[in-house]
Image 1: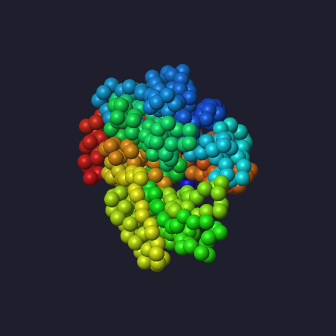
Image 2: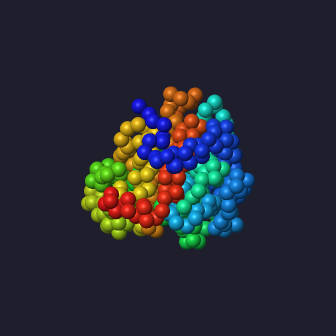
Image 3: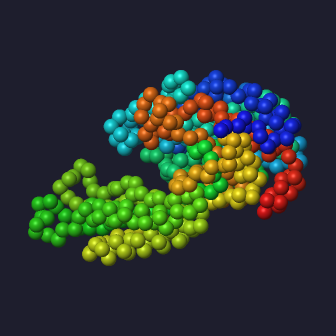
Length: 450
């Protein structure tokens, strides 16, 4: 059973939400998402897309600006001002894509070739739009744009400010080969946005998953170095032989087994932190005749909100020690090279209660918690700075609704316009429910819930 999305609102807010919803159309959302997909925005090169977003919002009557991080990377944001008596709310979405959309950088790691959905070019299949990042993150960013535009056009009397923000560097990556700064991903745009004073009382981040998520994993990255002997194939049978690449394979196998037990130990609440060995580097590709003295592995280990990076570092070190005991003569060390703590927002927070009430109004049933999550987003940056934040998004397009198989990449690169409409309406409802109240009223409501 589904609802109309309005249950629980009083008469004035119901009227304001309905007025804003009248400006939400499938045609406009399709136009917005095509505009976003057709502008490449790999991590580190979001400047042109940020400019497009700001210009589009300005044309809709929103006060918008771009915020450069350097000559290539930029955020975009807009503000609808209230009268100053209410809380400020940020609707947030990242805008960079995980891959680039060019053979020179994506192949062969993404597959044998670039499909059409892996390129920054939108294709429309009736209700569906495909193209690089069409769902994650650009479909969600389009919903935030549409929500801000609709509320502006509706002329709703706001008490607090509504900020629509679009962050560069939201993907879990460091600089690409052509990058000039190492820190181009991992929430760098969101962090810069807050450092430069674009701050609110509450935040809602639009990222995949049709649920209201209040906590999520953080992550730590390790560089694991496995040492061996530099020698020549012609001397393998005459000199000491200890191949670092073969040793690294043994380490990777044992780590992959350890990750399973690790996830079982830390699965709690809505999170199930996972780990992977993500890359291997060692040896001279031009010279297959010799072995390298060392080989390195990269590891991404997700951590629960209750696990600090230092605790994870020590536990990972213990895991390597256990592997040494199993593999005689193994020389392996690890360095933690990146750390972002996991975070949570209490369920008594207004933003969770309002967003969950909206979800229930659309679905006509109690809010359904989705568990077993291991994805990290810029919500960790927002919460880590002290802003109560929840995440709401669209579900992956069902394979039955698509004319192609929905694998991981197509899940990121395919969006349903109908799902966009639903998410946009939810964003509008939550925003109106928040930035039309007084701060005293929300403090009282949160106090009663606690």
